[in-house]
View 1 (cartoon, rainbow, N blue to C red):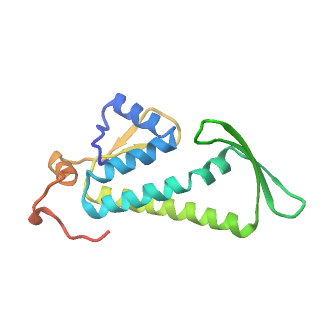
View 2 (cartoon, one colour; view 1 turned 135 degrees about the vertical axis):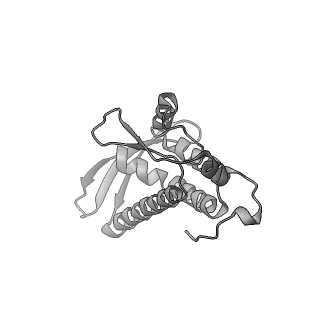
View 3 (tube, rainbow, N blue to C red; view 1 turned 180 degrees about the vertical axis):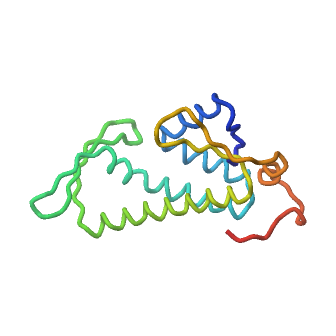
Amino acid sequence: MVDGIDPSSRAQIEEFVRLKLNTRNIVARLRQSAVKCYAPLGIRLLLLAERIHSGLPNRNMAAHGAWKLHASGQMEVEHYFINKTKELRYVSERFGDRAIEAVLEDADLILREAIQLHEAFVSRNLKYVSFTANNSSQVKTTKSNASAVQHLVSPVRNQTQLDHKTY
């Protein structure tokens, strides 16, 4: 929304969908977008980007690892990752219930913050794209006027233009 994606442009929508396929690019895009919007929302976007970035190893392990119940009663995961020197590394780790619950709670809090941020942007009448779950090509867009979009993304505003609504 902050970057002003045109919901009627098929090319821009496809670019946005491709972005979603690379988590590290999503984090980078969040950081870039954060500096373009209303400061309180931008700060929240930066914090969200950092939380997502710090959780990427856990996310990748959960999504791509092979999980099994170890004889000790802990969950064991075997997975591979690429280190900073671009070498493929094998890892086998065990996790107790508390560690797994903590990671799940953190993921839930990240999702809740993302939803709250989305609602904050929607409340500011920004255009956004919403895809239906049935994988159709239909795109739902909100109605918004250009001045509302410009008001949010403009990097310099005088004090009278800011609304002091707390998010």
